[in-house]
Every structure is written in structure tokens, then in C-alpha cells.
Length: 414
Image (cartoon, rainbow, N blue to C red; front, side, top):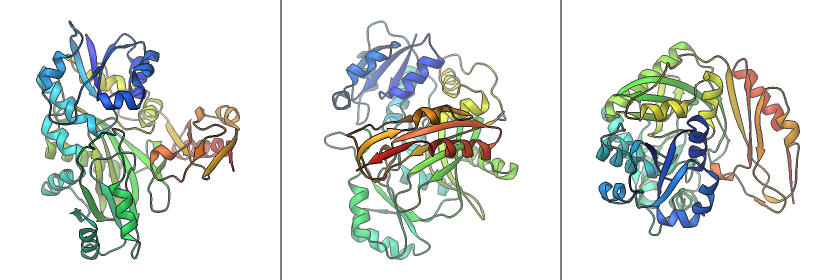
């Protein structure tokens, strides 16, 4: 029996290797991505990967042909998607072809496209901001006048990691914003690029959270609320998360009820959802939702806070025999991650990482740049330069610990 992963997410596969060490993994990845990212060499460090199979799972494809391209004798136990919107529909189609648990193809299509998600959830009565689809700068200018209010958000409909997202205040330069959004690249860089659309919507005000939930047979069986910290300015790059969020019982219930409403509206069957909400003065309003695992170490935070190997439980839920073991309802402690950003320039030195790693409660500390590397202005998640992760008795202590440890790290640039 093997786990089939659509899209070569190295972090996902490494976590699978840790939580399900006896699993054999087969990966399907787009041929262009295999070459761009040097994946044939990278998977050599992942002993559970039995095969890396080139295949187009993004455009129109025959799932039976992709299944036939797997190594002879391969029996698939479950199908998982990497942490990228481009992989989810392919995973749903292949799971359906194999008769395995999956999100359902239509649900995967809805969650892959932010505009389609707006249309479906609005029709179901789920609170959304006002929005418009825009095709060019002239339509953006017209929509900005129509949605006139306390700011706007411009985004591509098929990207993740804040790529291409711009926050606009009244009077901001729309020409520059349109150019930034329409040239944003996703993780999968193909020639020609996958089709995407563009969405402008009113800017919400309140506290931003995400909800990570497991769904089995159309029912939410686990839900965790994550507090999100975002950079101020035009580019809302996420710089931190805390699990569980310090929200009251009423707000938590409203959020989990909202997730069940979302599952019902989209027909989502089996899998995991990573959904962002703005808790406003009138209640939670949907920002966006992905039909996949959360990135940004959130699964690690859930594991630390709830003592729950979220990826392992998700994998068992997607298998032929269904979920195994009990799923906790409450967290025993809090966990936080803070992402590091730097001053643009060329790195001269990095110090303090070991000291940060030894600070109270710290579980991990890492910097991803070294002397000679370039640090850029943070406009998307990929521009961050490291992270610190810690646990605490509650959300406040966990965040104080990552902040304190992060202050010990110094990245000097010239």
C-alpha cells in the first residue's frame, strides 16, 4: 500500500515520513516543476519516496492515464495534495477515479478559485465582503469607485502565500497595484502559466484568524482556531500565528458553525480545510478558504498545542479504513511561530540563532539566509528569512516567547 501525493511538497513528505514512518510514498509532479526545482535530487533525501512520476495534473488530463503511469504493482491507499491550490483538483479527480475518500471534484474546484468560492458561499448566505471580478485596469478603477469605502483588497484568484495580494487605501496608485497582482507567480511556474482571474473586494476590519478543520463524510470532526499576525502596509505578509487563538467561546462556536456551513455549501466530503476569517464587530466574515493543509508551520503548532499529529490523522482519514483513534477537542497548551523579515540588502552576517533556540519554551529557530544572500522587501511569504517557534501556558506567553527569542537573532546587511 502506498500514499500518492500530488505535487512534490518536501515539507509535507518529510512530515509524513515522521508521523507515518512505515508509509511508502509515490509522488506525481509536473515535468516542468521537477526540472525547475531539481526535485529528482531532493527526493533522494526522503527515503519513503518510492517514485517521482512526471505528470500534468493541472490542465485537462485523464486520471486513468496518470494512474497507469505509476510503478507496476502500486496499490494506492490514499491520495493527498501538496500545500498548493494547483494540486487539489488533480488529487480530487484521481481519488474519485480510485474510489478513495476525497474532497469531491466540484468542491476542489470551488476551493481552488477564490472568485468561485465567493459566488457559492454568498448564495448560501455565508457572510462575505462586497467584491467584483476585474479583467483590466479600467475595470479595477470602476470597481474601486463602486466599492468605495475604507480600503480595498486586490488579489489573484489562484495563488497562495500572499502572492499578488495588495491592500489599497483610498487614493492609492491602482496602476502599480494592478501590475503587481497580474505578474505574481505561484509555486508552479509553467509555460504557458495556468489561467487565473482577478478579484477586488472591500477591505475588512477586525481580528484575522484561520480555522484548520478535518472533515469526514461532510461533517467537521476537528476544528482549531489560529490567531494570525500580518505585516502592516500594502502587502499583507503573514509574520506569525498562535494556536489556539485567544477568542471567546461564542466566537469559536460561530467560526466552527461557519465551517460546517462552508462544507455544506460546497459539498466538501473528506479532507482538510484551511480557512481565513475576519472577526468583525458583526461577527465572522469569510476572507478565503483552501481545500488543503495549512502552510506556515500551522500543522506543527496544532501538533504542539493539541498533542495531535494532524498530518497523520488527516492521512488516516483519507485512507480506505477511515480515521484511527480519538481526536481531542481542546488544547493542553499554546504554541506560536514568528517569521523573520529583514532590511533589504546583501547579508553580511547572521548571529544569535543558537541563543534563540535555547530560549525558554522555544521548539525551533532557523534563518534561511547566509552571508552573500540577498534580502528583499517582504511582499509574499517566500520573502521571509526565518522563523522561531515556541510553546507556552497560554497564547500570550507563547507569543512573548517567540518575540523574545526573535530579538536575539540579528541579520546584518549592507
